[in-house]
Length: 254
Image (cartoon, rainbow, N blue to C red):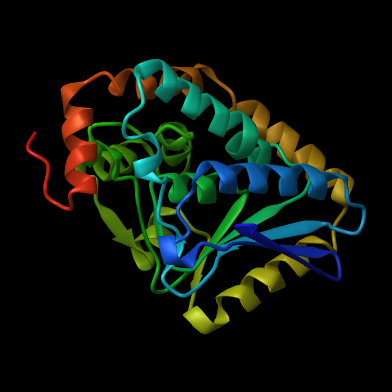
């Protein structure tokens, strides 16, 4: 059974991550499925914009599937980050058409990184966002250390990552992390309205805008440093304690 649903309505595609029982956490099959959809949508002439969201009212994407990688070695951890960048996060950032993240609940860790890889973000008033990786003894590994700084500035980004904390939708909008907030039952309608506004303009021009903006913001040395540092955390005692505590549902002892 696929963990990603696709619907196309009049040149707008709706991609829905469909693992509500796991708060739509990103595991390897879900990343692979999203990758395949992103590649296919780039080639579809009948699609001009994409809305990405999560199934259910609770979560956009609650993060990575920690049980999947808790026992990885540093080399495996680095490969995990690199594979995620190549398959999904960079592919969305470099897509030929606009991606709008409709953040409908928790967007934590890899979930917030996925939203930040999209070109625009709108959020439900009930959304909560954060990069809590430091509470696990690790760092964001899917572009979060780079894209968060670009969106909210260095000081706020460091505050959020150091504290492993969440912010609500109102603060996310005030900080510039999301473009707008909407009531939960109006979120997808608002995202679709934005997409339909976008497709009135030239798709070729929008693809060129994406390429030009990415020339300044994507693929720099900071992304490579993040991947290397992410992998290195997998060899530390604090990573072992952090992930073990998470899986045992207790607070870590750092």
